[in-house]
Length: 257
Image (cartoon, rainbow, N blue to C red; front, side, top):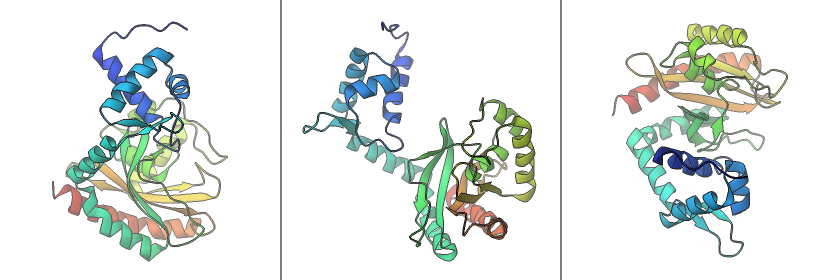
């Protein structure tokens, strides 16, 4: 199909970002035809953008199969971003929390595609669940997402309206605005949020915010694991522990900026 020509340089940037975001979760490499189809571009436009990204080392091509993957320049920028945010100073805390609870620990920030995981410490158990760094999490179906909504820059009801349709992932997923507003009010009262198999069957979580001086959550710190260990009782036990951890992250990371 013919494609509408770009109206501005901003549109070109948006299309390049869309291509890079195809690799955010699990796809290690893609052919140019798949990139064009998934990004909603015609083949010529996709090829032009990809070649530019390759030239700047944001992507690279595997000479063996001619597929494309993320390039080393992104790793350098990612490292610089982590260093600039100061979140790497929270690594000892997430490691200690993971060791003390036996579960995976993540730190995330609000991104355009949901919650972006920027730090992760793995559980010691063989049976575990973890959010890898760089992964995106659905806001309404995760404990970290609900914390960032409840303590965000905009009121919770306004933030929910901006989400649009709330997708259903399991029988426990919250899919109505009223139910989510009610839960976010509870999150603000308790200081932490829970996720009871709302994104994945058999997986639960709990999270708390790292608040800045104005009371806005700049980060969320969460624990995730199998529901056989993270029972309702265990989630409520871990909630206050996460609240203290969130305060510690705020003191170490935000105060140090």
